[in-house]
Image 1 (spheres, rainbow, N blue to C red):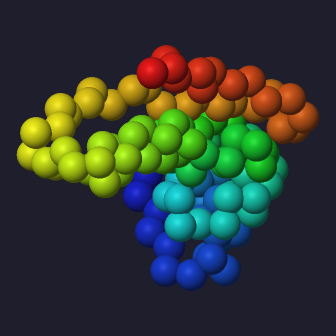
Image 2 (image 1 turned 30 degrees about the vertical axis):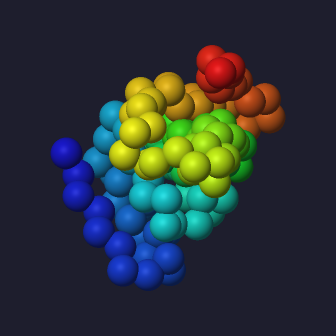
Length: 121
């Protein structure tokens, strides 16, 4: 395992240069880093990358796994509606979290493969 700690985004190039020499199997990218730049460097150094940032794969990263925010917002609206109609929050059932979205990209990021169809309900 390689631990590449970055303080500033300017350190990305040096970190990927070092990782390119070490040849890691994959890199987990923090969502606070500039996704497009990370994807460019990962492609340059041929390092597989994954992130919890939804658009990461769309910006050229290998894969992302994240919650489907639109779905979560819709489910939250249902709870708000029930509370505004008089339901007590403590009486509302707890829902099980639905799977998140998995997105991947082909080398070069030209085609996105998506598996993010949560169950409707």
